[in-house]
Amino acid sequence: MAGRRISSVVSRSLAAYLTSPSSGRTSCIRRGLHKYSTAAAIDEPITPPVEVNYTKLLINGQFVDAASGKTFHTVDPRTGNVIADVAEGDAQDVNRAVAAARKAFDEGPWPKMTAYERSRVLLRFADLVEKHNDALAALETWDNGKPYEQSAKVEVPMFVRLFRYYAGWADKIHGLTVPADGPYHVQTLHEPIGVAGQIIPWNFPLLMFAWKVGPALACGNAVVLKTAEQTPLSALYVANLLHEAGLPPGVLNVISGFGPTAGAAICSHMDVDKLAFTGSTSTGKLVLELAAKSNLKPVTLELGGKSPVIVCEDADVDKAVETAHFALFFNQGQCCCSGSRTFVHERVYDEFVEKAKARAANRSVGDPFKQGIEQGPQIDPEQFNKILRYIKSGVETGATLETGGDRLGSKGYYIQPTVFSNVTDDMLIAQDEIFGPVQSILKYKSTEEVIRRANATSYGLAAGVFTQNLDTANTLARALRVGTVWINCYDTFDAAIPFGGYKMSGIGREKGVYSLRNYLQVKSVVTPLKNPAWL
Image 1 (cartoon, one colour):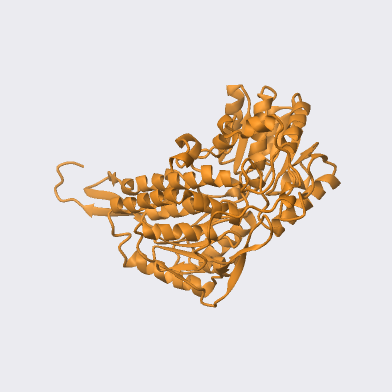
Image 2 (cartoon, helix red, strand yellow):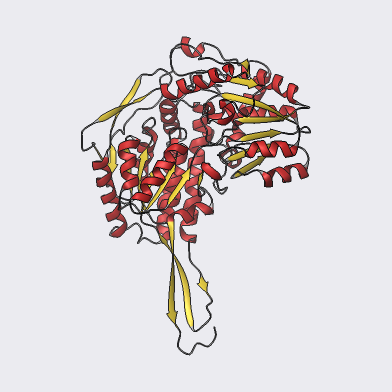
């Protein structure tokens, strides 16, 4: 157990592990030991060290088949081979799950427990997940394609940290006593909102489970969670551990299935009190529409992005190259806050492009279970083909293809790390969310210009700024219309740091104290006072 633990700093920061000297990644890359190659196609895939034990729906504390009896394949993105057949939930199953959640909330022990008792359940759950670290990491990598080292040393520990964080909040949620103009005692109550419907994406299945389920349970709610059809396995695994930790039946229900059926049923359900969704902006609009057309339930949305990374003329170019590379290529580029528009000042542009090209060409790509691999396959054929279409578009519209630009090998969904220079704002690769390993490098002349261009997008999720000038950093941090600005770093996450976007990147914030507001109602209670000694 101790051997797989990492420092609390690393567990809270995706960037820290993947770029630290102790990880061996940056130093090995600089020595040129790793290059992308056809190893992904030549080598026999490593057999994952884990068994798939949970493939059914979780409803009212029991794993059950879908009412229709249907199943669907979940696929290994390294090969395209089937991992397992998983129960395909639909509206009938959502009805069963919501009924179980409603009964658990209205009649069950969970919201009536003391907050301290709820906290202890979440802490026991975190301890269990920590004990199952390696199995969970293997399952996440097998189903998703992300490097095993990332799953085991960063994401599962972050999952544990998030649940411990929310366990700590459970008994610190309280209202206020409010002075009024008259002889009244006024207090506010912070009450659980009820049954929360939650829909999580495929790029970070475990972490998105924690971002949503953690605060909902800490506040005393019941949950109906839909997993992404591409990655249902890890959520079912941890849901079982949560019940082992003492969660009452019906408080958490997990439905695996598809958006148009199971997802739409959750969004439209009249007995769901709140929705939380992470995914594309186009789907987020549908979620909001269905919520409005049903019972006008409140909605939290964490959606797409086209995040700018701004490299100023005084930046440490080597550090900026490495961090901008990480900002884009991390998680195979399948990250909502991916730094997918790299703006570089004209005075350092050529140097930056050459070094970014070399860094991408030396990126290690292959079987994500192999030690030292930085990049695994894309999630599925749809995403794989979409990325290749964007690469073709970049070439056809006049961007300079510096490196990459094609699939890697002939098996699985691997794509070469790709870098474009001479990208202009009107190109699709500079406008659309590609969600893949494609870096677009744009040139700018002045701070005023880059602010205008960076904000000229419908998205507003995140941004990175690289400068040694505090005034420049402050100017950009306040001018950029985004939810998070990382200065001389990127993808630094913490359980306490809120995350969310401006504009069409979403509504509301997740993580930190702000996420608790998503799962609470505020009630005012007013009582007359007779002959009060003071007001």
